[in-house]
Length: 357
Image: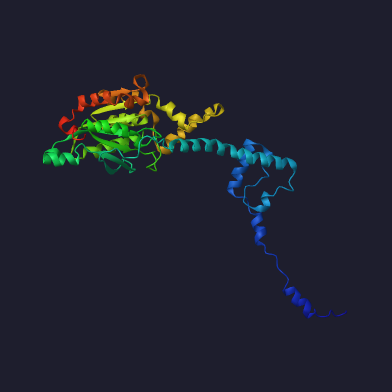
């Protein structure tokens, strides 16, 4: 029998350097699909049928290639991806309109210079019930000239106060034309800056959360030595009027209310600002309202004027709407009706009211 020659040294060295296949990838490929793939397959089978079951959602490039797939699979895959975008778009459109509607650009009245009223005012900072940082401007009754002329007598006594509250998409500067006549009538005047204006980062809630801001402003004024806490009125404009009524309903120390153009149908007003205007998108309005109330944890119906019966019946209330003058009633009538109403119920001191000429 012929003897086999021993293997050559070169062949042995080549065998030693030959790569050995790693069995780990094969074991991984043979492993059962994860649970999410099983859920995915059952969901697709129920919704679109068996043709979609070859599509894997695992983030591997090889699985996402469709060049070699049949035409019907590529078409079904494209249809699936577009169908997945539908709920995203349905939720995105109301969310965007809610954010835009609750972060309005303030409508600044160009005729009013920002806090240059021609008389002394003091800036104050305070916080709402939820910690929102706010600020306001207080115009005291007693001027420095009165202190020089009357001495300590001018600093004695307490005076009624009026808190001015702006509405949605407005700024406190727009209330300056109201501050002067009230100050001359003997009232301590506070112009407050609510959330949702350009001076605060919080969103506007159309008077619901703003009621806490009004209550905090009233408490800030009531803490002043020169103010009688039993004689504080609130003058609100638009949604600021709704916020004032809701604050009074929550037992804020408000002796009288002056409401200019309060929003009687707050739900419709909110939908005008955050609702989708297109007719074919009106079906999404309930979702828009739900997103608004869920995002800011509010209930629109809470600030409806007809619901606040206690606030409207337990104190004097003066309502000025479009039928009695509209938005320009203050400027056209010089606050005569408002001053008469407040003077009748709050009784300011005439001796100090004439300190400014």
